[in-house]
Image (cartoon, rainbow, N blue to C red; front, side):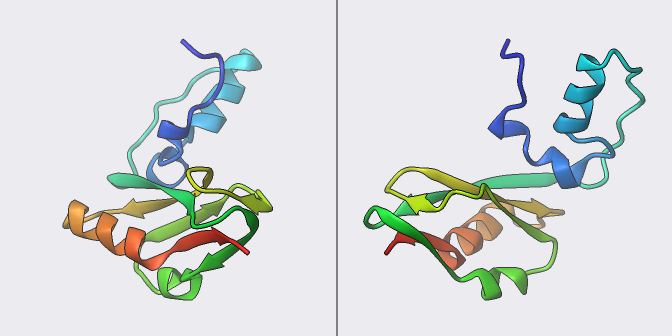
Length: 113
């Protein structure tokens, strides 16, 4: 067990009434843990750097923002390199999960300049 939040739980930010971050803090501060509700089913897609290394450049953000129930999270990294996790996208209420994942992956790209 890792005593920290984990990338796999980032979908909880939008999908649950309390995120993994909220719950982690409550445990650390010895606060009560209320019931957690599912607001919506969700899928999380990692945004991975591609192309060459260098100053991070995001392409497709406007198109991504136009998709319903899609939330982009940038990790604040200024340098991109191939294979580096640069952020993630959460998709709520995915009717066709694999199609939505493909749409997200084909819409947003992070490369180095």
